[in-house]
Amino acid sequence: MKKTLAWITLIFISTSCTHVHSTDALAEETKPILDRLQPIPLDSGFRQDGYFVWCGSMIRVGDRYHLFASRWPEGTGDPDDLVGVLDGYRKYSEIVRATSDNPMGPFHFEEVVLAGRGGNYWDGQSCHGPKIVKIKDRFILYYQAIACDSRLRKIGYAWADSIEGPWHRCDHEIPLTEDANNPAPYIREDGSVVLAFRNRRLVMYVAEADAFDGDYKIIADNIFSGGKIEDPDLFCADGKYHMVMNDVHGAISGTIRNGGHLVSEDAITWEPYKHPRAYSHELVWADGTSWTATRRERPDFFNDRTGVKGNGQPTHLITGVLHDGQSWCVVQEIAPE
Image 1 (tube, rainbow, N blue to C red):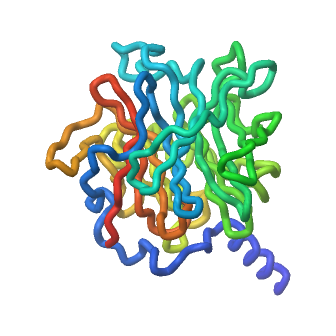
Image 2 (cartoon, rainbow, N blue to C red; image 1 turned 60 degrees about the vertical axis):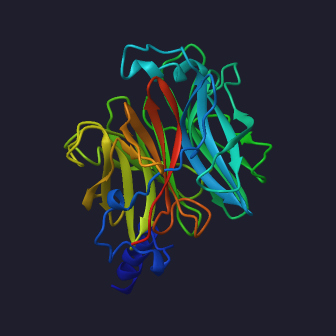
């Protein structure tokens, strides 16, 4: 009996998220993230002339903020199609790094970090959708990619001992589903990984591994059957996993393509959070103006108290925004409760 209880306890510890600062907990919140989003400075975030910029993910190293993002040339998609306007990423996307001394930005381009490397590699054609995390003293960059002459998206990672590289790529993708994209890692205190991702049908999965370079096993399939979801981001607070994503049909948030919010005790069974709508398409600016984005996606939550994403109540929301035919990464501050 004692052995059985010990085994059950081990399973609970391995599946729960325990690396949480109590002062950051969401348990006593009465005000949703949506209502705590602050007006945005006009020069917030990261943009580059001549490029679509998308998929921002932030980390702080020392007193410097590093934003990893996807970019690809404007004019490579279908301008008359809401989805196809950004479709050039499949052939041309590369991952870049930009920096700022303020989490709000403005961020300034530093370098191309990853681009299609050709040959028969899983990431031979394009690299897209970065998520930057840190495990001990090593930086891990998760991303999705497409091989040359393929339409299938795959997920993998690169690692470096310095935020400036050099970056070492995995030679093969993580074996998940036939088409796997939108990687969203959460790093547990012991270095194990929870990885959310979706397939081409907008079905969300969760996998886990003992280490970033370990074997990944799918532990949850179709975590929300009530609607299509994509672009997940994971963080842990109040002892629970939180996932915010693009709620494609509005089945969680109540509004099409707004930010839906799910919660889980074990990363396996998920349900709508008590405040199920995390963000909208309306952006309010510091000069008092506001407008509604054509698309607002790829949420990424950053906690400036810890300098990384993942643990505790987030302080900033990064999203990709499309407006008037241009796209860039917007950073929006989240006020404390």
